[in-house]
Amino acid sequence: MKPSVLVTKRIYPEAIEYLKQHCQVDYVDNDEGLTAEQFHKRIRGKQGVVAQLMNRFSADVIDSLDGLKIIANVAVGFDNIDVPAATRKGILVTNTPDVLTETTADFAFALLLAAARRVVEAHQFVHNGEWRKWSIDLLVGQDVHHRTLGIFGMGRIGQAVARRGRGFSMRILYHDAVRAPEAVEQELKLEFVSKEQLLRESDFVSLHVPLLDSTRKLIGEPELTLMKKTAILVNTSRGPVADEAAVAKALKEGWIAAAGLDVFEREPEVNPVLLQLQNVVVAPHIASASVDTRREMSMLAARNAVEALEGRRPITLLNPAVWDSLSARSGV
Ligand code: DGY
Image (cartoon, rainbow, N blue to C red):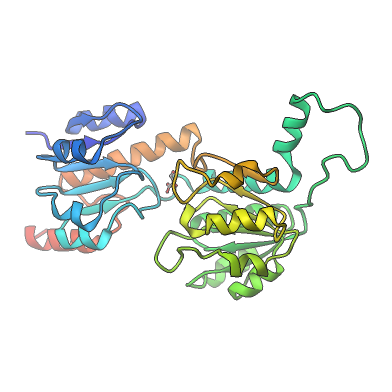
């Protein structure tokens, strides 16, 4: 009998077709997803689940999942899953790295450029019929080229953003818990600096860290006060990496010049102050949202689920310890 998989929310049809070739698929074919109660009913008897970032797999939820072999998350971030709890329970967990790196970096740069050059304000200005004449300081913004870009988190996406910064002849500073390999530092001409130096010297600060206890509120009031008054903050990582109320206050009171924000602490809610400000460009968590990338993410999650359910190592496995112990048990 084919293994059975729950898909908690709409994904690309190619991925559903692929899953159907290998599994019995219980597909929640809408964008609403499931309530906790519905989820508990539908997950019963399933060996796999293709999940999304709003599906919370806390230790309690994971402990209640009997017979589940894999949680295949359709996202590179996996802060919605208690991976150590899944590991203890012997459940494989996968994410979707790589396929979204360049697309996410494109969007971080789009926000950076839009905030620096006031693209959204300019669009609204023309749309509102306010454009009567050209003037020397009409909608003047900040230069991007030859400025200093500070990147928190020099993983795959951080590096892709740095590469874009190099294309704009920017000086690139970075800070991370782990220093990037020397070859990467040299190729991208990166300067590894302290958090304080990055905040003090950068014209643009872009966040590319995963959400962990150590990165929660990485940017709060103390950090915002260290930044230049002309600085621009870009967040395409996770909302709670920046203290949203503090960011709103900093933007309103002019501690920093502008921000481009794709992620928020309590999505889809956005701090109302941010929505009243002209110096913020906001987006609804779409940094990885190109047609090709969202299709690739759906396919990679589906492939991960099928690999695990057919007894092969999933492609982008987050907890190899589970695989090692499964292989040891089956004598592979
Ligand atoms: C991710 O992949 O983690 C994004 O935030 C969702 O696309």
